[in-house]
Length: 115
Length: 113
Image (cartoon, rainbow over all chains, first blue to last red; front, side, top):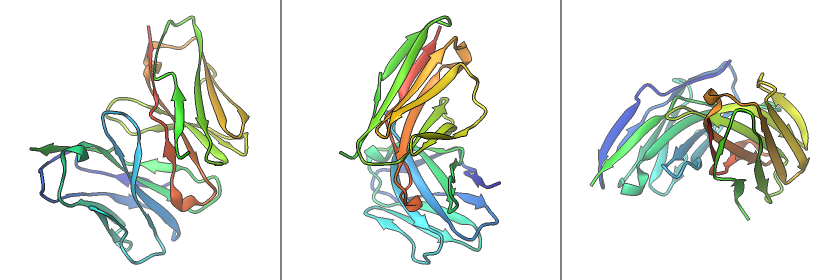
């Protein structure tokens, strides 16, 4: 079974600074997908960024980028120019490429942004 | 329409009540999901519907009964719940391409008294 580990329960960043959230995963599969979701106090889970394992290039979405290290099974999220609206709980998630595959979430990390 | 809509947003029910949660999407997604989430924890999968058929039941107690009347609608019927069932219930949907992840609704905050 796949597992996703987010070892830091909380992090804090100064507004306009850069922060990196860590995520590691364990799998024996070669084809899979990785995601970062954001859940603000409004409760809705919002997809921040996704990465296909077969792509070597790291995904980027505006101020959000990932450092995907397939051999190390690491998938960290970098938030540049942090904004107050980035404060939320962030979940790393894994999904295998097989039929009826499920999202496996990490425990999440609470990010606070200091003005 | 790129949303998953859940109603009601908040629900308080007694342990002897029967209530239903509703989830709707008009994105043409053929897979729909129910998740349960406790505070500061990740969502836990409860049920998966694929093409309107129940494909996964994660050993959920029978007091939770899912229903998928059509490809756009997903219900969760609740009966004889316990206080420990109080949680945020999230609905999600996904299209066929696995790389696109899930689209989540904003959830129903359920309190069982």
